[in-house]
Length: 122
Image (cartoon, rainbow, N blue to C red; front, side, top):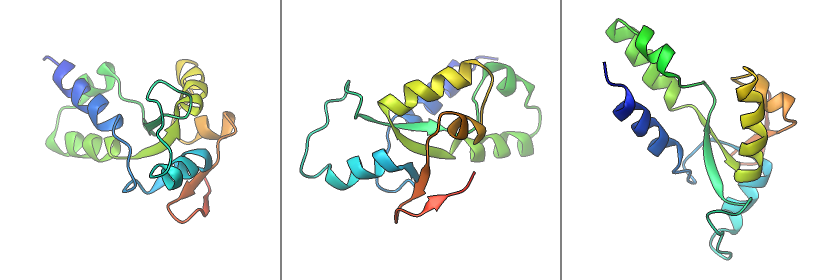
């Protein structure tokens, strides 16, 4: 089973943050608000990224056997938080240590807010 096309799809989906995403961090929310006035350089620490809340691994995808399991996995891929590149680099450290889902945001001391700026609890 070749999983690279699926992993590429997940990566592409994750690298296109926009106003329509419901959750974001406070710095990312600020960048979205001022995006019309300021150009953000893509490789800067202010660039936006859609961070997958749930890990996407080849091992997990290979373990999926039923249509229901695949449907659930696709639903989880949709759960992302818009973060800045600087925040994403901090989150990657925790992901490499095996800390995932909402716990990684708490460990990285990253606050998630909704599109109206209200803090969301993990």
